[in-house]
View 1 (cartoon, rainbow, N blue to C red):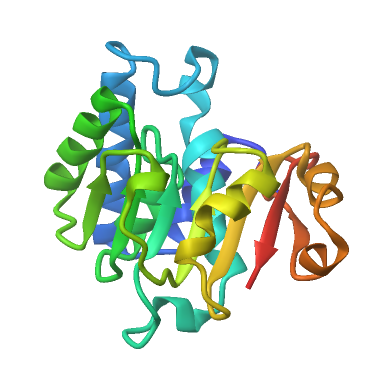
View 2: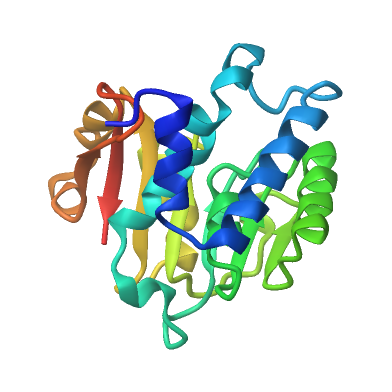
Length: 208
């Protein structure tokens, strides 16, 4: 379990190399700077950005198969409702050779995400600055979403991007098990809940 900023930094460092860690450090600085101008993260979490936001995003990588990151994987990683870039931009910074698509409809956040992509040097990451319903469907290798929509609605909206090979990693906080129970049995059987490493009471809904 990750309980503080030191542990969170060490955890993320263990997932990447020096260049990847430099990108994540730069991204954290950009988020904190921009948070003075628009509400990207709660002010109370600024001092805990590594535990609450960065490590919380990075841990999703441990819930998908290694094939997800391979050159032969089907389509990009799709992050829904990316907001300030959690988890999608963290994923892209840790795996810069993997195509990542961030879906975010709010103009100021789209501008911020594009600025981060340029600053971090992530040519395979791009932003779809519109609602998911208007994005041209493509097969996704993985789908992530943090505070995007209730589970049933999320699965309906993301269905055009999902194949039988698509992994889902959906941080759902303390409502994970409860939301999973709202699905019909056939759909529910495809998913399971993993405990979050950054919050003992939070869960991640996974289909790997």
